Image (cartoon, rainbow, N blue to C red; front, side, top):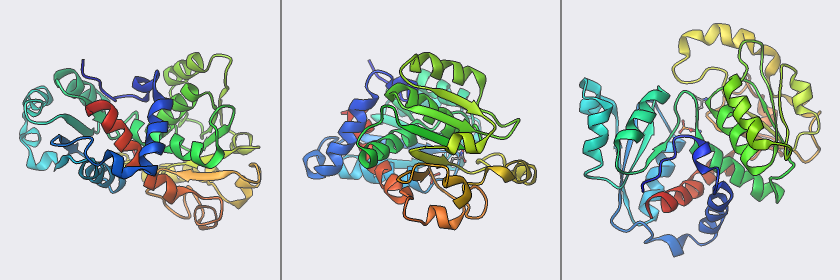
Length: 302
Ligand code: CP
Ligand code: NVA
């Protein structure tokens, strides 16, 4: 049976195994250099990407396989061919499909109609591949995931959804502070709380200091996600009190780490002194996209 990674919940049973495999592949890349010999990966990107695209493509090369980058502009998908037919056709050629989509419904339709694994490379509600790399980074830096306080400051967006669910799966406490009107969706919170049970805490607040207090990890993301550009002015006003700056991080543990999925906007969601400071791990985090995605590809295609 083929297996998809549409939501981080698809890794509910083996998220820790995949994170550990990522760490193992990072240590012994040569051992895996033929793991996906002769395998092909289609990568459909409806939105721009620096990290996700490059790391998946390089991961396939370093595993002995091959990746094809496809923009809907250059595909019949962009001229009205259905996602269902696209799924059925690509499944006859390639061993897996990576998809960055505007709409989670399209992601689900692609997965449903593909006979090969579909891996979500970000959509409007989740970014699971990012979160595998992020949790791997936290494990490397902190030596554990259980009972850490992971705090997200900002928009209850795709990255926040996946990070909250991922934190619940691995048994970390998750706090999120968002402005009114930008809170993480209630159904996601319910799912996270039911996974966390009494093992860890899921806390939703409008108070960034409550979230930052004694945090092990301070995480933020852009205030304006791809596709929300027309809301830029309003969002930049509404998120003003939610900047990750030296005053806010002074509430965190001394050895806290700062994380951001990137791309970052210095002076908006984070100040330069924080993202370029000694507690920031954003470039190790970005590097781990490569290793974590190798682990995902080996598990799903290998
Ligand atoms: N973090 C992330 O997904 O970056 P890209 O948009 O550059 O892929
Ligand atoms: N929330 C951001 C993440 C970018 C990697 C977006 O969707 O644009």
